[in-house]
Image (cartoon, rainbow, N blue to C red; front, side, top):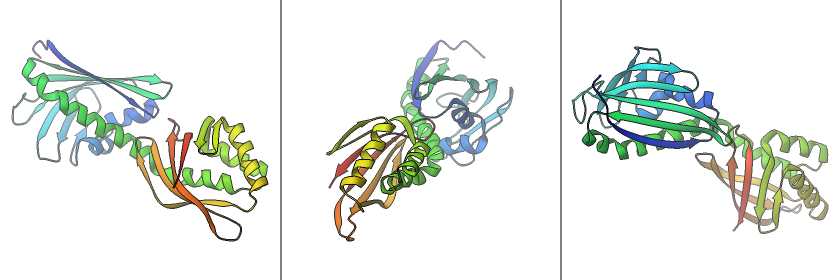
Length: 254
């Protein structure tokens, strides 16, 4: 390969473990989930890289280096030859562990400045699709996590309530709404105990499907008293940690 003096750098924080993120760079089905149907990768040195964008544009290259779960390097170019022919540029993706998941660093090296300029927005868009693909896979069971939060609110037994919270929430979970400013799972548990003491028989449940985008989850809810009458409704914003547990909840009353 000729000298590649022009480079593009971009970093994205992905709220998932490195091993999970790395799979979207090395497994063909996951690779295709953020490039397009028909895309594939043979994640071994010399293995083929194939990208088929939904608009029909095709790119290809070959794997240069693989160091699981930390680094992959591959060549890249377009079947049409424009803006760069197959194998004429080099992409390096490095994954660093981060307290909030994984920090992805991408470097794309080019022979000329024009090709680099053509890829700035492309990688901004493509890595956004990447983050969403990882998040969508991680969110496969998030509805059960949200329902677990509401189940904990409805559980009258303190021991079982604590167990349910521990299963779905991080130890430092935060909760805020017009009546709450709580910090930590023990504080949340004590608040729920007070709810059962002062509002016995009150139940809260999810209404409709959740909405999810990159570890942020919206869920509508309704609160009903022991007489079956509605006492309130609103929407919760759940934030998830890299392990898929609830790290923060903000409640909005309608």
